[in-house]
Image (tube, rainbow, N blue to C red; front, top):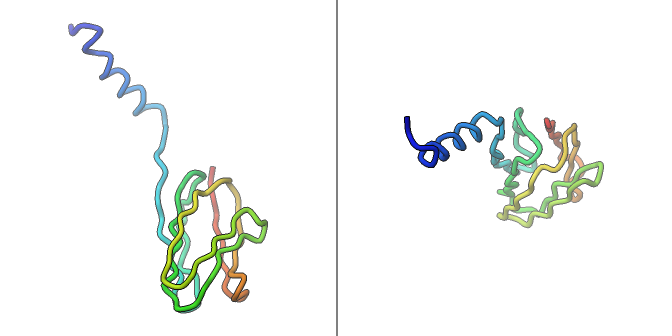
Length: 106
């Protein structure tokens, strides 16, 4: 049997792996053709969304509940960490017909 000092890193690795700690995922959501692209089905609190505006127009990604408001000049991108679970409807302040919804799981 190995010494306790040599086994400690192995035991800590096994403990961490079995703890259920998940790393945050990163998703890229694109705005193009005056539309928001599809949103991920498996979005969780702590995940990161990279909003990318491929349009020639300025857009925002504004939550109806005011939990976020991302301003995106043409051909730019911005990162946002998802902060809470639930359904969040969003729209563009400059183009209110542009809408979308995030379904965030805990």
